Amino acid sequence: MRVLLIEDDQSTAKSIELMLKSDGYVVDLTDMGEDGLEIGKLYEYDIIILDLMLPDLDGYEVLKRLRAAKVETPILILSGLSELDSKLKGLGFGADDYLTKPFDKRELLARIQAIVRRSKGHAQSIIKTGPVQVNLDARTVEVDGKQLHLTSKEYGIIELLSLRKGSTLTKEMFL
Image 1: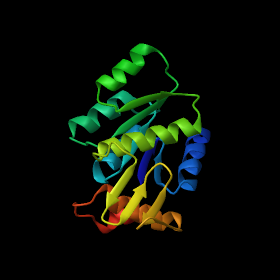
Image 2: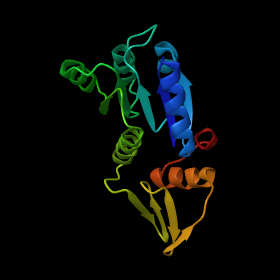
Image 3: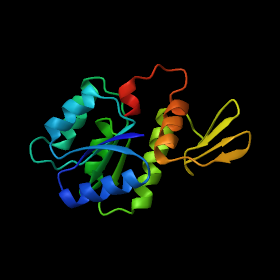
Image 4: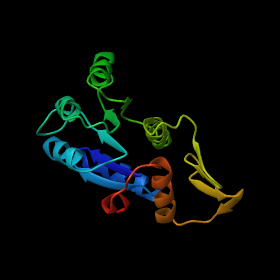
């Protein structure tokens, strides 16, 4: 799964990046809203994690511009702003979810998985394609009921193919 992380706090960004990479995610990271906006328009991601308080461009503005540019990638706002008005504003501008800092890493992972699963049209965490069964929550693959032992890269490829079955995939999507 490919994630774009737009976060200016270096310790938070590094912590999230390491957590996601250890779970087999491919993470692109930027600390500037303008860069995140351009990267989000250029490349295809499974989810964008967006901080609101960025040094150059307000996170709400990044969100509005991404949606105005018809970028349909799910966006999870991760912010220290915990007021209800901030949450309503973010969700109103097109965010798919809003999580306040500090947060539990397990909750962040669960929200990412749920958002991506729903955005790909899968309400359940298990995707079946013929004899292949991919469990998105447990990050396991079974063929004819027998569990395969895969590297994180191998799992990532099968997950990508399962989530986007019927779609044409580019070489860049696998990198």
